[in-house]
Length: 468
Image 1: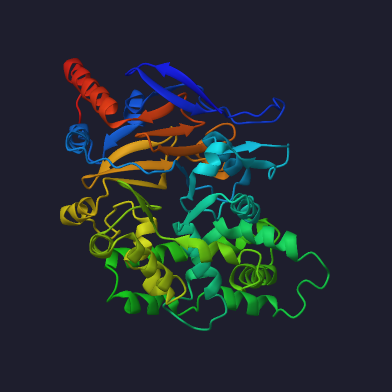
Image 2: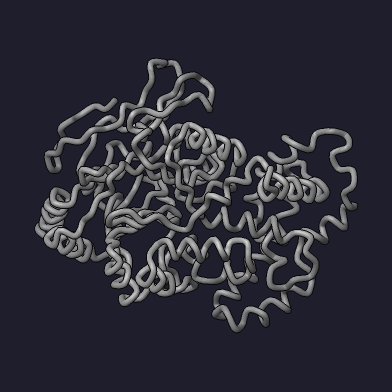
């Protein structure tokens, strides 16, 4: 069901999802009941990476005048950065209009007519922070079992989780034996979940080494700090190596106290890692499907869905061979050499923020992405406090969709209440950004949004505000 409302800024007709079922006593996050043009939010909703919003105006004008926008044939429902919060995920499904709750339990939902038509894209970062890593994955599995079209993209937390769990106990390997510790305290909720779900009997730790040996297998060898810079020197800039050393030193200090605070011994941590491998890597493991389904990107129409962004190397692959080649490279690398994956261009796609330590995307690389028919990147990774945002980065339009929905991040950022968010790409040519943390759904339709943006920038010029 949908509800249609006419709004100003400029006047638009847009159908919002019918969020609620017939059970008003159920707890739902507060979701917007009206929409405004995406420009209504000002700096909270749009901008340009260096502050010059006229560049965003120019790019929107170019794409619109040349009629370069191509829209998907099916609705796309994009969710990102759920970070082990099943409640936030189910609330976001409800916000999308793709599911309808059928009972008070978290798994009591079914597909709506829209859900049967749509493609659900999970935009990465299902793991870490907590509290419900495994429960979140079971909710995604429930969606798949309902015959929804589900695409799962890799996030930096997901890739690190896999690499970290695989690195434990492999012996001295200075290229890779720091990957478990690199997970840091954020992995503790998952370890607790594994312990409480699978390691509760008196014999749960039988057969495991003693505390000191488990610690030795979990932590990198003491010579790692001297060896890693030499190994990495031919592959990484010194600044990135220095950042990596600093991170591992910090986590060397913080990880074991965080485990102790959660009531985890090193034996329990090691046992939880072994259980994770059984669940995720064994063919009959409950979550074996998760990494098997995972892809780097999804391309449809003018839109490319990834977790973070691009660099020149990935732009070259995309331009030469398309999104399928990106995903082939990712699948080949995912279970290959961890160092090469994590410090290369593939993992840059799941973690870049276009910082100096990230692989660069040049104007030539951005042009190759445009030449591939892609005019907007839709992604998560940059957490926002006021719903989704349109940004021009490296000359490419980015829809930034990490709306900070998981309870851990919301508490850290000072956001109140439960979180939910979805970005909806409609075949009829508009995009909705729905979030608990902005009072209106943000509606993007190229011509109308272009007109509204032009008006807003002229108004700023008259009032003496700078666009930089």
